[in-house]
Length: 559
Image (cartoon, rainbow, N blue to C red; front, top):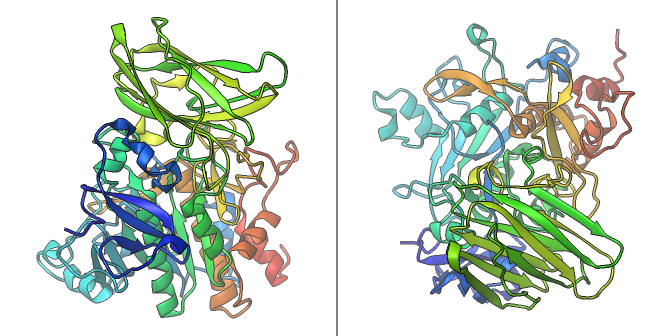
């Protein structure tokens, strides 16, 4: 078995300057900056984490979704003969749970597919894409053969058993279906789809994620991005990448490996990136404290639910602060004080409750230069726990703390004084991608669960708000439903980016346009409410409006 698939090997993200050779199965190239080093599993106990720096561990990502087209100006553009923008010539790149390629939303009138290729990372029986080492690639010819076969799965066995990827793809690019009052934003675009394999169990185990939780690892998403970029470059076509996934691991500042990669390709000509802001704004999974007066400590409370038997949390101070921490159970049992170190891990068994706690108080995390405290709980006593942090420098300090995103933890576990701000998930904290939050298009209110800015480093995010409440979408087995959340909003906005790329690249108006420039166009012409000050950490720069953008670019006056 390839090491990238083998659960006996950890996958560690490393800088390419540290890699001496790519000739073996020990290393997988991710991109020009990073590679994946496969290390034989060394874990004898939970504190085995100290043998690999925190920043080398791929983050765990979860899904970010659970109607009016007129709200964002889409219908006005599609009905205007001066525009006629339906995504022709543009590739839509989906990195998600796969796609139901047999759904009528992705089949042309001549019964051929609108999907250029599918890279299914979960199927190992076929040939992987050129330049990649695992999974199976299904090209358009194979998909078309499957569509006319009595047994399509015998030719292309790739399926979307979850439905999230199919829904996201359809919101962007699904064929019109009047019977279901449905149409994708750009129904003449074509699709390239990456079906992600689930995160390795050993990575879930490091972060104490539930073993049956659906989540994906950062490195596989990075490989998916490289596949999309490579495919678009081969075809010499503009590309829109939609990432409707998010993670609460890391410093929420855009310095992670995936963020660094996306930041660079956002500057490529002909590539636009739409990323969801995440749905962590309304569940009290973030805590913030700013202590400016003596005594320089803070005691904050965490309610742990009965169903959360294993989970982790992170505390992020700012350099050069140095924190010590002690943790107290609901029965007043307390760990000893844990001081910062480079690698040391300390484990505690709190007697009467038999709660296990492991603390890595890391004094230097290399991607940010800041300290980070990783706390992992096993069999914690349900109830209110207290965490006491002290600044050992005896001076004013501030810090953030985050619980895991999505389905990695239940809503029973939360901070008693949670803060809805600074809850945008990675990679929504990336500087140069377009980060999309969601609003209810029926009453113009932000969805309470939408992630809020700004980033931990003060960067203005989100960038834009888009419709994200019960958007009509395709679901597997040729059915239709609705999708809600910032993932749905990111899909809607990906369709807007595709329209701009068709106008700029396909129609020859601005063939060198980059993702960063597209973002500026969308932000500049956003619809803004006179009651609010923009930008702000909830709506960003306002509501997306493609009609305003193209009206301004083309010089056509509103009639």
